[in-house]
Amino acid sequence: MIGIVIPVVGLIVTIVIGNRGSSPGSEPASGNTGSRDTAPSTTAGAGDTAISPKVRFKGTVRIKFGTGGEEVDLDSKPPLVAQSIEGYDISIGSTTGEPSLSAEGGDLTLAPLPDSGPAPGEAECVERIEKNGAYHADLTRGARFCVQSKEGRTAYLRTVSAPTAGPVLLAVTVWEQPG
Image 1 (cartoon, rainbow, N blue to C red):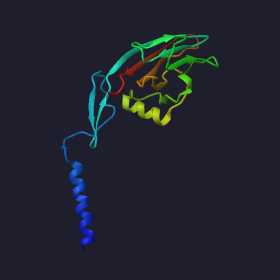
Image 2: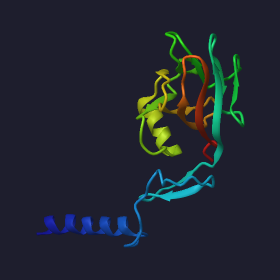
Image 3: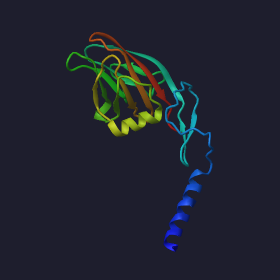
Image 4: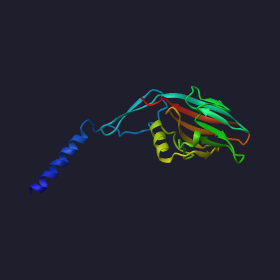
């Protein structure tokens, strides 16, 4: 009998402690609230608190596509685009005539996302980079990516246009470094 009572008491204590601090009407934690607010937000999970970094830059970046390619420094505000940048994060170029995106130095800091769906939050981008980091990806209209910058910032890129000649347009969100 004692062999059954002790595990049951332990289970009850675990449940009571695990539910402490939650209320019946509280919502579950979510890494992406769908909010486009640039202020930091607090998301409470089971015993932890995460603060989403503030948006550093949100806008369109125009990149000249042609011979030689262009480099983008996502740590600059706004992101800096040029043919040669010390410490760049990504480059737009071509080996086949079609535009492509590459992470600087062969780092696995570029994570392709499905072409459709809601824009990810900073935490989701970090997770995608950790799980699916790549060095190189094709750049087609609608293609979406998460990128980790050299200084540790996270960015979300959505391809607005990717012609074989002329400017490539990217919708870019760069978050501040986590505090």
